[in-house]
Length: 147
Image 1 (spheres, rainbow, N blue to C red):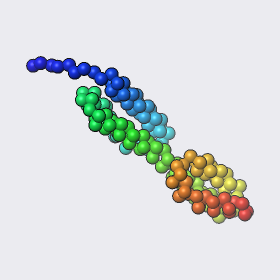
Image 2: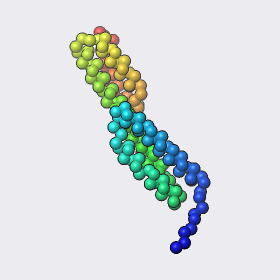
Image 3: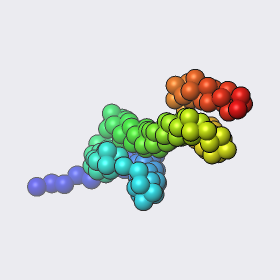
Image 4: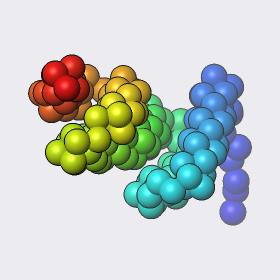
């Protein structure tokens, strides 16, 4: 049996190395999120396939295989962002609920403190999620101004 050595494409090798570095950064970020209580199971499952895709791309140097790695890394990034913002959104909803409850019980000072927490979370949310929360946040603000 004859084994032929294929010439290496240095540019593509560097690109694939950078993909693996990026994967390691994503793994570290997921680990940090997991340690703080975020559910990263889906991200972890998605990461399992990337090294195989990189090996395939190293063997073939086909652009379609390289694009598959890029695509998978982009999906992992998107999923990590969803994990972070999804929890921020849930936390914002919880702050809104708590603030309304405090206002109903006449605890304006505590309600104002919860509202300040809400504004910090609100600033970090993506535009579409801020639009979803805007009406409730504005109504809370108005009620706090009245009392």
